[in-house]
Length: 86
Image 1 (cartoon, rainbow, N blue to C red):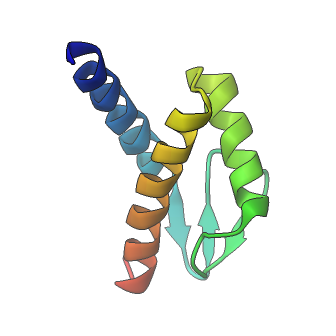
Image 2: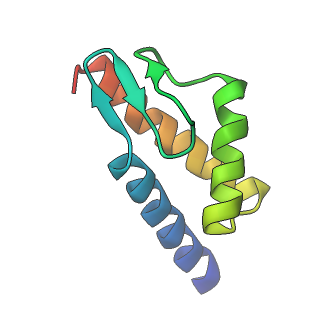
């Protein structure tokens, strides 16, 4: 049980780091995992997920389940920022 709590804490730190490295400027979204900017629309595509997944595996050493969890959290936060014009 302690491992799961520590693991979730680490995953939330990964999410926080990814969100802090994501910049929304004018009509573009700049992420740490995709080589060019994304249009200002919900980040949901599996195309983005592939880049995200590779980044999380290579940089943070996450496994598939951890990547899926972090992707869901990250995507929700960024899409909320996009919807609220932040």
